[in-house]
Image 1 (cartoon, one colour):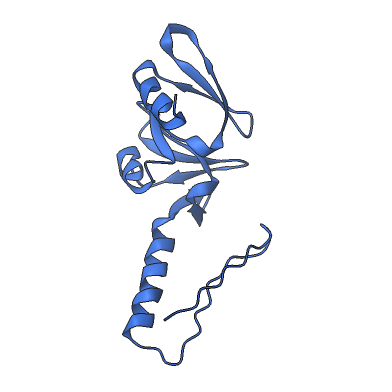
Image 2 (cartoon, one colour):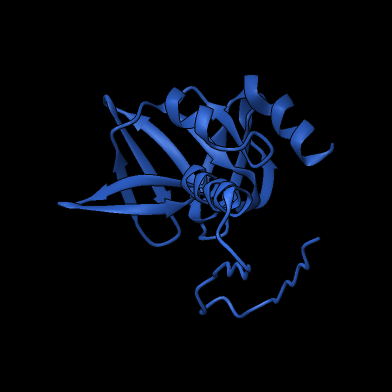
Length: 148
């Protein structure tokens, strides 16, 4: 039987998982593999200049495809991705991200407020003040996510 301890830490402290065991066996190795796969699934690679960055999904405001390029927008910066929009849509969790237009996937957790716009569209104001239009065809998806 394992004992589980969880300690909440400040945001400026790096998160870590410590496994204390009597021996490193298959069970411990499979647990480590599970955590590594989960970590890998939660990050997306973005390029800024010549550098590659591992972006946490909860840092992402939205992802946009424009002129055959895909960009990942975070609160203070943006990154280019080699993946297509549909590939990124398959990676991000459906309960946090949704397609809000033909070219944008939006992180619902980064929406500050939503207001109706013209022609049945909505406008989402994000936590950094940016505004993103939600196309008429995707408004029902937004309402479902927000529980409206």
